[in-house]
Image (cartoon, rainbow, N blue to C red; front, side, top):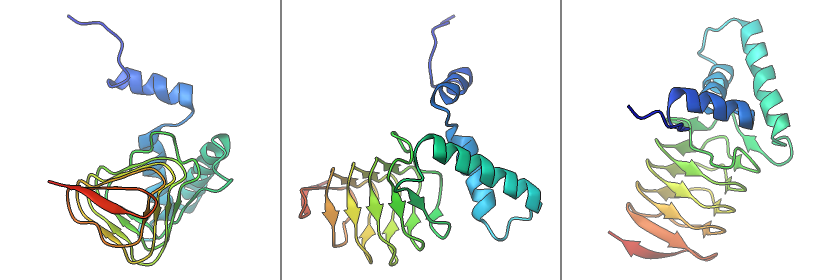
Length: 165
């Protein structure tokens, strides 16, 4: 029987959330309740959840440059390896499942659609009207100004597709 410690099991995730002051699942579940107008949760519970979200944001300095607009749609909560540090997401952005978003990313409002399993590198900018396919990797500091097909890798400040599977 293996008794080694891992941050992947239930106890390890609890310890990690205690150390980081950020429980990913709890934060995104409560955010969904607060931002959803169709949710019938009582007002005072929503108010408490909003307090919890703002407390976590303040602890991680998210009030300085972070804006995850309530109109943005997330199929599943995105993976934020460095927390929500400096991430700006427009109000009509649609983000698919299992996406990874690094710090200082800006996704402009203007009908941006991001498919499943997309990795967006640190400092990347995605401009309005862009559609990003599935399994795409966007490099750090890349400025995406045109649609990206499935299974592509995009790098450089002026984006160029360098790999298509």
